[in-house]
Length: 380
Image: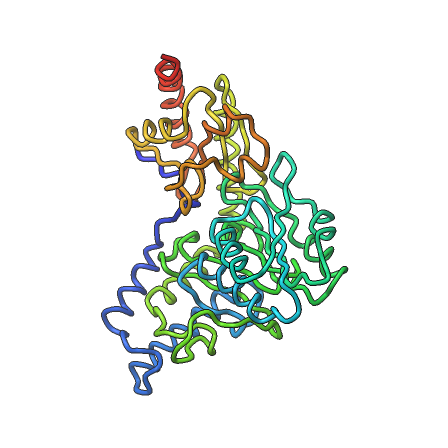
């Protein structure tokens, strides 16, 4: 049996996504900037995708900028805001548990003279809105916080954070990294008080290389890619029409029967937690998001456990896929102050709509069999 439980790293595309992408590449392959009918047809795919994604976010299509994915969306949000508002201030607030695409961008902005403050979390990985508000300075221009943590699934109170920050200074922009939230919990920029929201296509059964940044009407950011002025001047370069079209279809498919899908996913997660925590010295680090579960298998290093499971057709993650090449301890697990023996033995299981309780039973049987052996091997 194969059990793919790494859906937070990427998802399998829907058949309809594959079909529309092939059609665009083989038949409607025009450049959307061309004035002839091939170009007009290509542009229609972009507009249709904008409408589809906007509907899921309850925003206007023109408030979306298509990008190559979550990393670019986060870069555009942070760098674009910093460049646009640098005369008003050079201070940014974020958190210790953000994705590498935020932390690395903050470091880049620091090299340009900006300053940033990182807010810590409680033991569950949840940010206190009051701490964020207390960090606001006269020169603060932006707050960036993820909606759902990508390693443990903690749901952050982004609406409360935005409200607390805006109360101190309504001119501060609120950026929400919703890459792990989109398609799993409701994401409505207006309701959460967000000026900028990052999302990604390949987390919701769309193609890799697709994403979007919501930019609230009236919010001013600077582009970080210059050229022919595509994307309403915000992202120059010929649009990746097959990926954009695929993202649009994925958005439609992901949000069809949304509540039923999420209920099923949560049921699989809860069953997985119940089964694995019945084993000795297995600890649950999971947050409230319906699709992400985190466990520490004390006595076995994460990489050893990951590859042992892979040999049996079970696919998991030892953290964020975008940071997995680094050997440093997870900043998220460090932030929630996990003991060293748990920090070094943690795996993430991320559930998708194709996962089943039967697969969980298989995972439980395999881990029950191998865990004592791996622990004995580790101790030698």
